[in-house]
Image 1 (cartoon, helix red, strand yellow):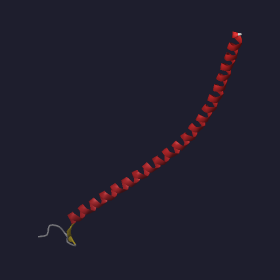
Image 2 (image 1 turned 180 degrees about the vertical axis):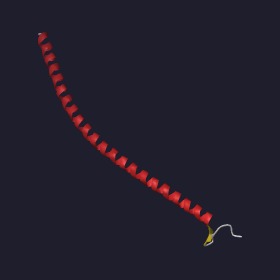
Image 3 (image 1 turned 120 degrees about the vertical axis):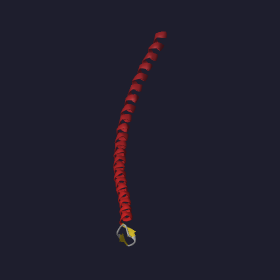
Image 4 (image 1 turned 90 degrees about the vertical axis):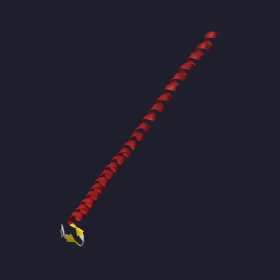
Length: 91
């Protein structure tokens, strides 16, 4: 006696098992593709933020450089004044 109906010598139970395996595989593959796309979007956003922060940092560094230069110039002028004063006070 045949327990289940045969479809080209494959039982329905085996066919259902294979179909569920294939559907599970396809579901996992689709989920992975979606997650990879999300990660790519996150990476793109991080790269954009990095470029923006690099530009901001470059501007900040230029401002700090110019402030440092002007502050150094002021300090050197004060040191020169002190040296002149000390030279004149010895006489």
